Image 1 (cartoon, rainbow, N blue to C red):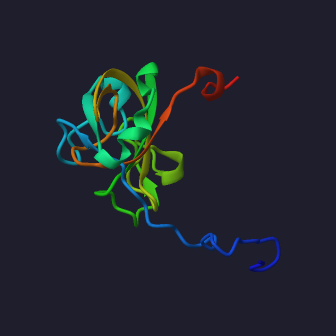
Image 2: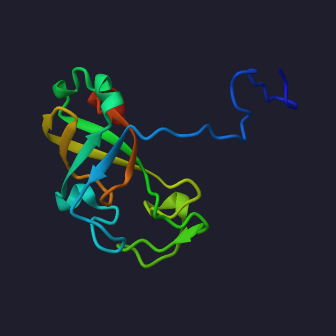
Image 3: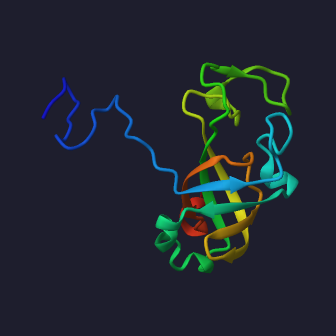
Length: 152
């Protein structure tokens, strides 16, 4: 099925401008509860510890995750301002477009943190370096693989 020159869709898939309803398989438990107090894009540098709490229905997705030392955690910054397109990073006084920053304020406030796994107990993954506030929804967890994820 076509939707104009160069755009092809499948009847059962959403059109390119539609975003499917997201599922949040987990949430964050963090000592940081308010914006402006916390890692602010520097979770890995601060050594902040947090927990990722996996919802029961997604526990089978953790099979063999204990083999991983590092994970990518994608979160939805639900308290972000989605209208801002420019930001001034805390470590650089020059204004940038949000796509040139790690600001949580962006059209789709998805965060990406590379975390160290400290411990896994059932549906609780204790990590170091997560850049997220308490109760932040977790969109996905993916293993870090040096062979794939490190640039040449």
